[in-house]
Image 1 (cartoon, helix red, strand yellow):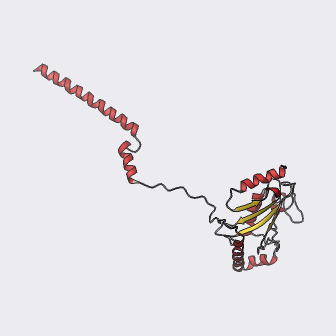
Image 2 (spheres, helix red, strand yellow):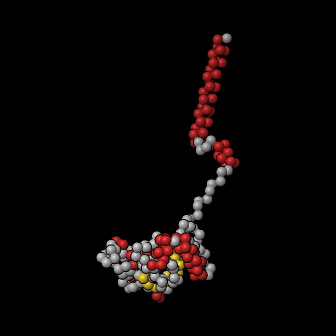
Image 3 (cartoon, helix red, strand yellow):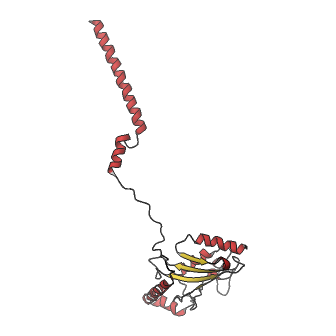
Length: 232
């Protein structure tokens, strides 16, 4: 297996653990991924969306960036009408004087599928409107946010048609909270009776000391009685 395929297989295994991405691959065609990118964020205009997308890789990956394209059109300042996303991380390595993009903003072999997907999710809620791919969406986002959000909600509803049969959308990205300890009075009373809140060893020592004190007191009393009998 080539180095590119090995890298992609490892990235696929790592991403399979995430709740917000549902990835389908064909090991016979490993350079093309089908992705379900989920927005699980109550503060997002796209909350609840299941955005189906495609990523394609070259055999020179990770030295050249993959391509990313949404299957459904999304009304967004940085998404073209054909679903392509205008984002720096997908641009070829190196600085671009014309666009003003720095090298650290663009693709590098240190980037990965996960960093791309996270960047796209971030872009959905924080668009760059100074040089939009969709001018109308950029103007609406700037001047009429309420109408823009309504369009976003309509897009979310349409996207749910791409949810695979039997797939359950996560409602939160947080893990289940730990089981709350039940405050059982009987449990505490039982523990207190047994060892006085965990002082079982010291309790035993106290009992032993008390026994020695009582034995010592008995010897003294016996000696006093003997002395009194001798005086008589």
